[in-house]
Image (tube, rainbow, N blue to C red; front, side, top):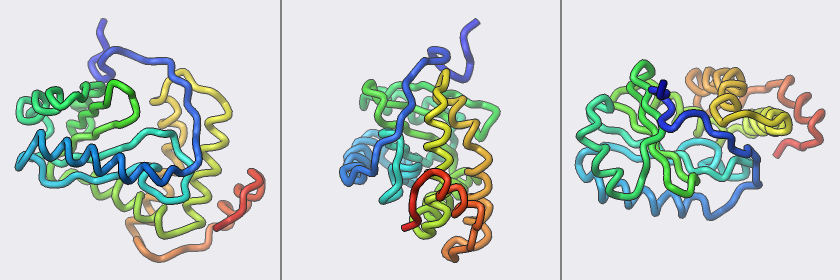
Amino acid sequence: MEDEVLIGGIEKRRIYLVEYDPSWPKIFIEHERMIRNALGSKTSAVEHVGSTSVPGLAAKPIIDIIVVVADSGKEDTYLPQLVGAGYILRVREKDWHQHRMFRTPELDVHIHIFSEGCPEILRQVAFRNRLRNVAVDRLLYESVKRELVARGWEDMNAYAREKSSVVEEITARALQAPATPVPVSSAIERAKQSGQQPT
């Protein structure tokens, strides 16, 4: 039976981190232009999110982009245009915010489609801003990622699920106090164990 969520089924891909690359914001801008040219007024916002949007943070070399449309459940309003621009539909999550994910053939850009007003947009942007502004949380997140990457994974979704607890922890702080650094002793301790230093 064909997987209704992962189009093409589970893929075995090597998951690894690289140091922050200053070219990532430029790559985002290039794809933002392509997306806006393809969708025009059908998108109300295009945001660079995920680890590649955070200066100084090690990341998988994949640019994550949120694209906001009126109704992500109505694929006919954006799918043909994005496919025409060269993107491939990979994820269709009807039971989770009607989320869709497209990617490039090179697998280096993921485009996440959400509807206007979807709470996940705020969550992901708040998480990004928290990591940009609070070094302790940035260090905590990177230390967890490095630990997980070292284990090896069957697919990227399994890796993402495993780090969901730390994402939720940081997101909760971001939504409570977006710009206020907070002391997190456990983060410092985990950073010491991984041999990294706070910045």
